[in-house]
Image (cartoon, rainbow, N blue to C red):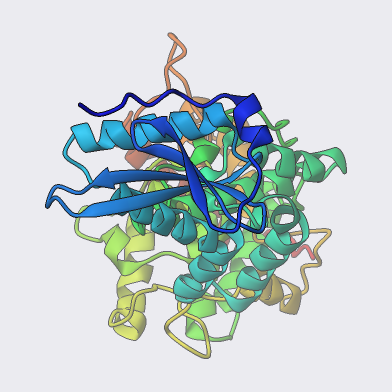
Length: 408
């Protein structure tokens, strides 16, 4: 009959002295303390694998690992055995997972994301995003395994940007961090995009005041200058379509052929490209469809409607439209690429009397119904289609006016 093992006590362990040879003090359930001649005391556990082969686990040295901690680890190992798992193999797997997580830090994953997606943005934009991350995000969460980062830790990094008054940058960086997390999820390096939990934690960005021409006569002069501009065909087409569609300049530049249905006259922008991260539908007036059909003969074999001048693998540079406006004599204090949005918003509301909610839809602003719910992307699409055609026709009329005074 086996002699029952009397559980160890802390007093017994502390008083255990080294001998000439290593010896063991048993606690029960396979757990024992190994006392070696040097004086070190190591926790170990003896168990049998499913095959019957004897194996051992090491739980670390005493007193770093206390008696109660060693017993807890023993109990975990025995629970694994009861469920049919090999404790040693489970430990090796857990160690491999920890090592992989430790190597996949936010900085490592972010740099990989920038490299894998570099064809999707201009080099200047890529550098700007990298500098945002390097300056404000990497010092806070860059060294952390991306799978272990929590929303509050991302928010702490964003707060540094917000605290210095750079509210728009804080929101831009939040979107970039979210893209890194979604990339990590796709690569099975993280469970989810934790930036989605931040909601409205950041202060709102005040409405920007981009220089814009909003007087109809002066808009007519601007349109005649645009249609008289002699530059690269891509720039000429982008210039003509910008006031017609009044979308954000970055969206115009990054327009892709896969997003367009020229038969239906629709541009469907996926949410990943949008500031509000919702899909956006832009009804295309006939004039825009004609311009895009002409562009298809030039760039239809590639990805982007308005590709870069040097390579078709990237979209048009973010400075192209503004540079064209400057070459026509319109300074940044008078008109900007972003100003086409304010131009449309002001004239459509104050001059043409269009419904404000329809205008806001086309500006891709957040619009809610009377019950406070966000409209879906197809809300009032027929009415918006008619409004966009009226706007394009109105612009044609302004351009045709011969008695307008030039304004630069």
